[in-house]
Image (cartoon, one colour):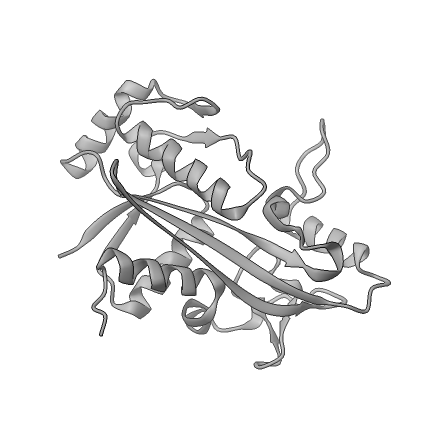
Length: 233
């Protein structure tokens, strides 16, 4: 039986990776995003942990599916119309909600940028940096640093209903390169993270391999087992 899950993001890269991961797992899950239903939302990520921000985003969207707007959450539609938008598309409400808070932690920087990975280098009044800009800034910050150890973190939160939710967190280790090594896969910091085992940057790793071994893959694998999307021994 297929399960439809509403993602608490409009990041197409995350959706694509989650679809690839579930394909590898043979988990029958269909992901949709708020923009597919005609709305968008934003939740203030006020926690200093991946788990805290993941839960904030998941709860914000879960409450919107019930027509409720939590403090610190904005939506481009009146909250009471959200259940109707979902029902028009899916024929039922509410639906399971999945959020993902992820980033990269650099040992020499006391595990920064961490939860600020997507906002690294942003300055008030200026346009946010692009992925390339954040990569270049991190490389420059580490220019004189010999310790290049780093790890990705992914925290995934699945809210099944108002009484049941699942949260898992996983990591994936690598080292920071001294210059970008772009490839055809990945996004974010992937062009500057080196995987010694494969002798490739994450951006050069084949996508199907990344969908088996990444921080996000490991988190979704565990979450899928807990949610009953895949058979477990």
